Every structure is written in structure tokens, then in C-alpha cells.
Picture 1 (cartoon, helix red, strand yellow):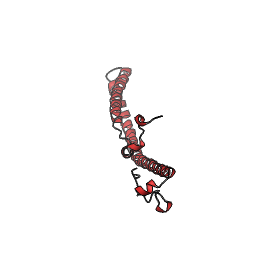
Picture 2 (cartoon, helix red, strand yellow):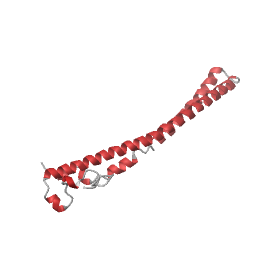
Picture 3 (tube, one colour):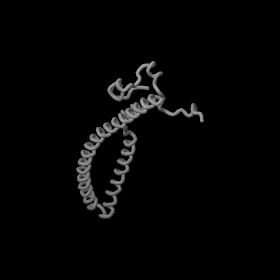
Picture 4 (tube, helix red, strand yellow):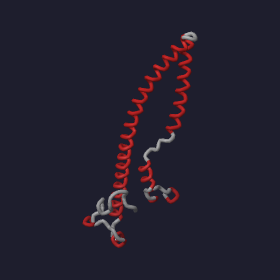
Length: 155
């Protein structure tokens, strides 16, 4: 059984004064119940540490994402105001040359094209979200002994 991802074995659940076996001779002298309790304690500690790692990673990434979203929101609002007034100016300019309704339609089509391009870029970007890389790497290191092996199971 591998050690938990954090802390030393003696400081995180193993105490010599509790009689937890540490050598092969001590393991041979232990009951199955004691060994199962030790394995259960190790698994519980491991899972608790993995959950704590995931929570810490989510908090860290969430703070970055929140700050970035706020900045993008402010930039988006500024861009919206610029786009609004430029659109009105283009509409008024085209209104001098053609019918007002046709001028408004041309401006709307231009914005439809811009929206389609931005949607396409956003969809491409969404595929590159990295997720919880450290947590995923850590969970991948859980020993194969914990994974079920149906071919070896008999009923």
C-alpha cells in the first residue's frame, strides 16, 4: 500500500503506541480486522486529501477566473459602447446615401457576421479549458490495487 499524498505515514494515522504493524513479522501476527482497519484508514486519509487538493485547486483557479471575468466584462461593456456609437454613425452615414431601413439592415448584417465569428472563436477556446490538472494527475497515481479487476473475481 502506498503512502498518502501528503504527510508522513507516522504523522497521519499510524501510531506506534496504537499497535499498528510496521514490519512483516508484525503483519503476520495481526488479525485480518486490524489489517482491514488500517487499509480503511489509509483509504479514508487518501480520499480526504484528494478532496482537499481538488477544493484548493478549484479555489485557486476560481479566483483567477473571477478576476479575469470581471476584467473581460468591463472591456466588453466598453467595447459595446464603442460598437453602439460606431453603428449609429455608420447607420447615419448610410442614411444619407440610401433608405434608412436598408441602412439599418446593412449594419445589422455586419453585426451578425461579427457575432458568428466571435461564437466560432469562443467554441474553439472552450475546447482548451484545462480543468483540474493536479487533482487528475494525483488521482491517476492511486495504486492499481484499489481498482477493480473483474477477471480475478470469483463468485
